[in-house]
Amino acid sequence: AQKVTQAQTEISVVEKEDVTLDCVYETRDTTYYLFWYKQPPSGELVFLIRRNSFDEQNEISGRYSWNFQKSTSSFNFTITASQVVDSAVYFCALSEADTGNQFYFGTGTSLTVIP
Amino acid sequence: DVKVTQSSRYLVKRTGEKVFLECVQDMDHENMFWYRQDPGLGLRLIYFSYDVKMKEKGDIPEGYSVSREKKERFSLILESASTNQTSMYLCASSSLGTAREKLFFGSGTQLSVL
Image (cartoon, rainbow over all chains, first blue to last red):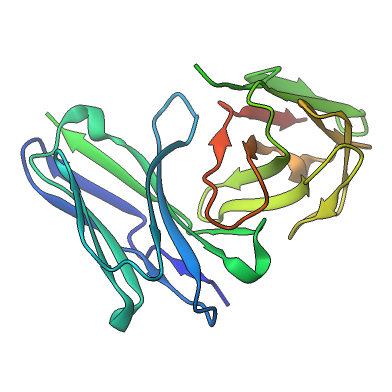
C-alpha cells in the first residue's frame, strides 16, 4: 500500500492564483516526520519543510504555507499568489522513527504556472 | 555551499554494458542513498548506505549493486544494463541515522539504455 499519496498528478494555474497541493500519508508510528521537496527543471530536489508528528501547528514562509492535520492524515501545501518560478514537481515524503533511514515519497505533483 | 555531486547529468549506454554512476558529497554525511525516479512512480529507493562498506537494500535492488569505499563517495553499479533501467537516478545524503534528518540531493543522472 502506498504510504504517501499525492492524488494530483498535474496542476496548471495562471500566475497570481493560489494553489494547494495535497498529500495524504499512512503510518502506524506515533513518531514520524513529513517533508515537502521541490524539484525544478534542473533536477535537484530541494528541501522545503519538515514537520514532526507532535507539532500540528501550521507554518507560513512567505508565499508558502503548510497545513498539517493528523485527524485526516494530511499535510497539504499552499502557494499563494503563484509565480512562474514555482513551476516544478513537488514531492511529499514520510519518514518513520522506527525505520529511520527509509523515506517514503509520493508520486509527485507537477505544477505549471502560466504567465 | 553544501553539495551532492553526481558525475554525469546525461548518460547513454547499450544493453549489456556495465554502468557506473558516481556520487560524491562534501558534508561528511553518514548516510547516502540511491533512488530512481520514473513518471507516475515517484522516487523509489534502490540502495542506501549508513557507513563506509555498509549497505542495505531498498525497495528495488534487483539488477543493481553499490559500493562505498570512502565516506564521501557512493557508487551505483548496473552490472548488465537493460532497457528497463532507463530512468533518472538521484543520489542523496543525510547526517546521522534518525528519521528527522532531511535529505540533500544531487542533480540526477538521466540514464538511457539502448
